[in-house]
Amino acid sequence: MNSSRFTSHQTKKSFVSILFYLWLTLSASMILYSCSDSGTGTDDNSNGSGNGGGGGSNTIGTAPTFENVGQILAGSCGDCHTSRQESGVRVNTYENLMNSVGVQYGREIVDPGSADTSPLIDKIEPDPQFGVRMPEGGSPLTNARIDQIREWINNGAENN
Image 1 (cartoon, rainbow, N blue to C red):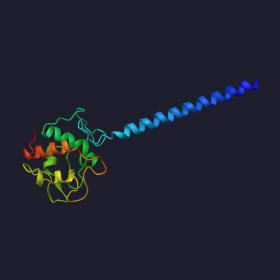
Image 2 (tube, one colour):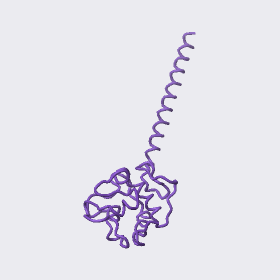
Image 3 (cartoon, helix red, strand yellow):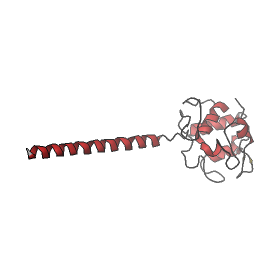
Image 4 (cartoon, rainbow, N blue to C red):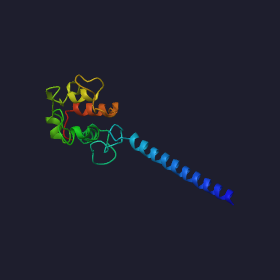
């Protein structure tokens, strides 16, 4: 009888150990999954609500309009440039974006009609003239999103 009690106790202990490791594995998996999509807005279909908001639907259109560009910026620029002004730049509204004067550049960050001379484009592409590529500490925008912002600026950067 002692032998069966010992076996039963070992079985119970093994079962608890298995449950613990299962719980630990599931918890780690959930943490890794939640970190794998930080919501930086770099995904072509993400509004980036995990990094500074973004509001609206989960899909950002591909048309070069301010509605779409605004969602990209809101999702990618985090709290640094959406909920407050950082280094002279705030991108939470069309007016704030167009009136933002980048401290490092000493001029407005959007040059309507010329993406090549717009500091905004310089800062989101590799190797900017000043400082580090944005979003700092986050995933860079995809080439498709950068091209979309470029096209919007080249088309006059209208509030459309």
